[in-house]
Image (cartoon, rainbow, N blue to C red; front, side, top):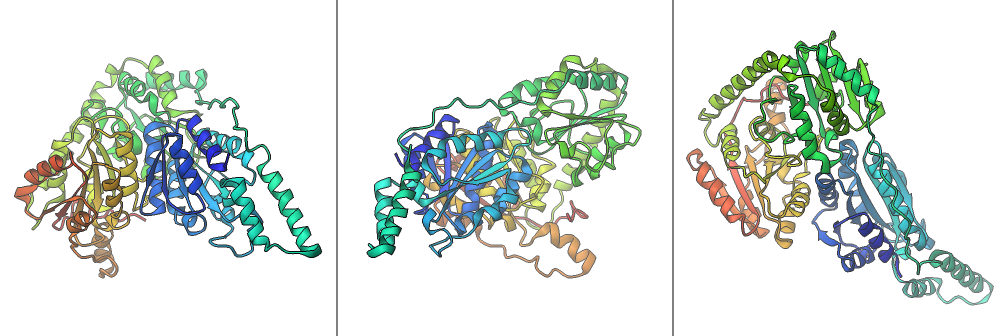
Length: 574
């Protein structure tokens, strides 16, 4: 059996259903043998989007995502997506092709030292040089990806470990050149010994028991301490981040637990949608103000990074609880009253069993809801302003009105996407995909492909900024070829809007921020999608309705020309 069989077997044992790839001779046996094993092979147009797609699958299912790319530039093209997954704590496996073991360092095609480049981007990076080691190595790496602070892993697989022994033997004999004499005899002997070591035991598949992943249960004493803090609190706040859904299969139980606690809650990252669209304890605006006023703050699965003002926006007199899978984030930037090294989702479920009656916080919650309602009214008024073409807030509101209960939202961009985030509400858990803390542009095409495969019957909305869309618009071709029914909405303002607005104001120069109002709908049509141009605000509703209907047959691209907006003035991120 060749190495592709061993890899396919290991992935199937872990429940992997999809491999994302861009083909290359170095990795072909992985693809052919995995397809024989019933694993779907999804080929994309750019290697980074293979990793982004694997990332999306892992986030939504809890099963490690898998991408396979060819050697050299195939691997280096994935680096941004790989580190985005590392920062987002997404468990995925990247399989990278490599030069033949006996040709390493001799100048063969696409031969570079990949491990030193990749290691800083992943939890672990290894190279396998013997066929029989593929199964146990991959199973160990998949466990590493899932345990503790989750993240990506990398396995380099040389081409001669993947193909059949007979074919590899022919390659070796050809490279040896049929040399005679002492030198030729020595080379042939070395190659025979090398082949023996490389393929010995390759006829036996690894059948060891899969190692269970520790769910990282909280200590009962820590849960009791938090419950005591809540009993004494008058104005508690819960901030929940992506890590609360590290165990996606428990999403519904977690949602029940959070509702039962009744703590005013802000959700971020993948946690958005956990409580549905209109849960009364979920707040969307004025989080910083609430943190300054609260007397008990629980930060679950959300680092005290720039998004949380490095912890400095939290009331210094408040009891602060930080729950995180990553021990480094328990005390970074601010030392909490209680640091809990455990799975945040499991911790909140345990806390719900011990939490006090939430009715004591009703006045506090009512005050917070009033602020939220007032902010929504401000946004609605802003959406009614006529700014030339399409008001981005008006477009976002009309998208929000049409979102189906099974919809998935993928966001990729700056100003337009951030404006939408004030308005659109994921309808259910695991239905919001953003890049995460690394803030990477270009996730859209890959994320949408992964989401559409995980939820084939759902409406998948891909909200693009026009700048961000160019990073992955070619994946429309992938959507068409693989029957993925994605609705891509491109907010076109002809600029890198989030940067331009404040750069011009601060520095008086728009250099590097100006784009064209490109005919993205025609680009989409060229790739096989249905295209719509939207320039008239009175046509927003009918265009969205027509696009949703067209998406029943295949992918759609809406090119929405946005007018100028000062809604997010002062939001330059650095």
